[in-house]
Every structure is written in C-alpha cells, then in structure tokens.
Length: 518
Image (tube, rainbow, N blue to C red; front, side):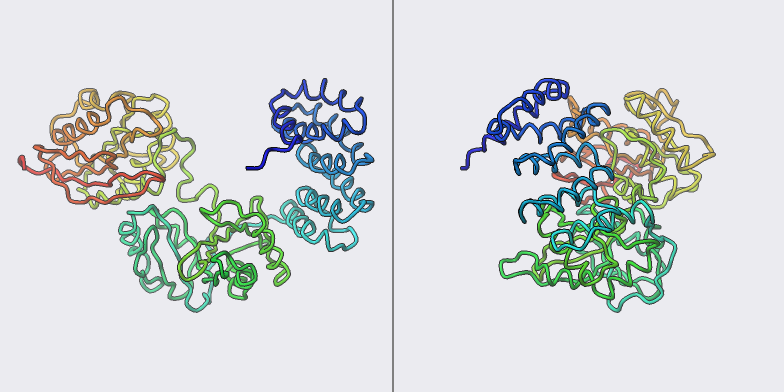
C-alpha cells in the first residue's frame, strides 16, 4: 500500500484549520519561507482554495485571489500549478480565465499547459473561445462553449412538442423500483393504444414502443415510474467488458440521436454523460465527450445543469445507451413544496395509491402516517372528491401535508381533516365509528431514517385499527417492512409484492376488509 505523500499529508492537516488561521498565519509564513520550504508547503495553496471556497468570507476570497494571481508568476512550476488549480474554486470569473490564459501562453512546458487547460475547463468562456487554437485547449474550448451557451442561450426541453417521425424501432424505458413493474405496466395501459404498445416488462423497467408521433408530456401522464428514457441502442463492449469510447461516441452522435434531442429541445443541445452505478468514470466521460464533439459539434457534453442525460448501462449484450430528460423539479410532482426526512418517494406514493384500485363514489381515505401528504394527494388525483384524513406525530409534517395538499388540489372540497397525533388516537379525535372508512393508504415508518421503538407493535396496531374502522369491502394498502400478517383479523390479503427501496426491501400489500373474521 502506497504511503501518502508529504504534500498530501500537509494538505489534510491544513484542510482542518479555520479560514482565519490559514489566511492570517499560514499564508504569511509561506511568504517568508525559503524557496525550498515554499515548495515543501505547497499543499497550503490547495487547502486554502478548498477551505475558502467552502467557508471563507467574500473579503477573504478576494484577498486570496489576488495572492494566487501573483503566484501564477512564481519561479517554481509546482507552486504555479497549485495556484492555477485553486483560483477557479474561489474566484470562478472572467479575471481568473484571463489570468490562466496568460499563464498558458507562457507555460514552461507541455505538462504545465495540460494542467492549465484542465483548470480552464472550469472557468472557460468567451476569452477561451477567442484564444488562438491550441490542441491542448480543445477540451477547455468545448467546456467554454457550453459555459457561454448556458449563460447566453438557455436550453429548455419541449414537453408538448411531438416528434413526428420517431426513429424506426425506437423503445422507451420507464424505470421504476424493482417490484413495481406490474403497476407501471397497468398504468401504461391508460395511454392511447394507437400511439404506444406495451412490451414485456423487465426488472425495474417497463418498455414501450411508440407507434407514431408522441410527446414527452404523453409519458408524464403516468405517475408510477421514476424516470423515462429513450433508448438509443446498445454499444458493443471492449475486450475486457469496459465501455468502447469510439462505439459509444458513434451511437451518441448518430443522426437518429440528434433527431431525438433536436425534436424535444429549444436552444443548444447539451447533455450530461453518466455511468449509473459505476462511479464518475471521469476519463471515459472526457474521452467520449471529445469524440462526440468531433463527430457532431452541436452536441455538447456539459456536466452543469444539462437538460439531457445520457446513461450508459452494462448488459450481457454490451452497453445500453439511454437518453433521458433531466426534469428538476419533476412536473408531475411540482406540488411538493416541502418534505420530511422519511417521506415517500413520489412514484412509490403514486403506486401505493393506484394499488388501492377503484373505490366507492364516496371514498373516505385516511393516511395514519401522512408525512408530506403524498399518498393522500396521489389518491385524490386518482379519485377526485374523496374525503381525506391524515395524521402524523410531527406537527411540522402535518403543516407540510396541508401546504402540499393546497398546492396540488386548491379549493379541495371537502377540506382535509388533519391531526398531529398518534395514529392510535385519531379515531377518537375524529369521532369515527367502526366502519367509518373505505380506504387506508399509507407508507408507515420503516425504522430506517426515523427510529421506531417497537415497529412490530406499530404494524400490529395498524392492522387492528384497520380491521375496526374499515367498512366491509374497504381496503388497506401499505408498504409493510416486516413479515407480520393480521392473523385472526377480518382482513384478507389480495396483493403482495416485494419492492426494492434502495438497499433494503419491504412488501407492498393490499388487504380487503371482510364481513366476518377469516
């Protein structure tokens, strides 16, 4: 195992110091030191850039930028390189860009040029584009073009614009949590069958085949999937199974890809390249982005606020390449103005609400653990006119639920009945008689992010209350984190599916209140 270098050790030590100590004590000591001592303490420059960027004051950053600008002319190349790398962190503006370009013009060697070019990727703009062509600056120029276009010509995704001639064989993947595929496919059946055909679901996704013109807004009428992606194709892997940059670039820059992005985009065509589940893969992203740009200069790989993302996923047949819109916030759930730490994932809340199925004309719904209100909102969107009841131990959660309900369903009639109370006390507080409810829909605490002293007792009490306050034919739908069943209670399970909640599993279950004990 390699030992850390003295420079890295010093950086870690200085990185822990407050900004005042770094600027008032360490920088003057550095300036007084001999050339050899300054080189040995070059880690101070990196530490100063990181600390001031995170917690320094505006005055400290301004003063430090002036100091770092001076160090760009230091006789020691290593000090110059560290100063050039720190400047974009604390002063990412045109002055830093001009200073780095000036240093680039008088770089001592190709190594210094390469480092400066990488620093310019972070601050490059009009000055970088106007600089005389240089092979070392090709990547910086690509980034500069994206930076300039980001500020001068915004890019937006056209959700309501139809692509008139989808590429032959195009597939759309609706990604979801593993275990929800059947619900996503069921919901997809509400799409116009003349425009979409549902294909065989796979793990954590449902595939659609467009049969003619379609819009992204068509897909966003569905609520149970997490992300939608347009499948660009499969790129053959390299001999060792790694991504093949040349083949990937050819697929991304293909005319069919350009037609898709162009049809749904206003402004420059900017994308972010990702390898989900495989880390950042910076060198691969860099190489593929440069190859794509060489093949199709209209496509800009831009890691900052790009409206499109291109995901590369390994499969037995090669690397699946998908193009998906980065919609932040997701317009389907724009009502969510606030949240709580253990709130449901919105598509999961929509799936829970859908699993309840059709209800009576006068649906009376209760969420005992309402959190931020997502299950209540999603159920009301499916079943307008339902009487909504919610409860949570946390008064802040109840306030958030109330605000989100008002945003999603303004003028709701009847108004929601919400209680900041233990769910066991709510029937008494609400004045319910046995059989008062038609539906209980909830994602109860799972004991992960919010500790629960006795989770088995909580789930058992939820079953008991459901059996008492649901009328015959009423439904209980929940994400059950435990292998607990309502033994001896008049609740018949009609659905059970294991779902992945991101590192752990629970079961999505539906029970129907029977007339008598089973």
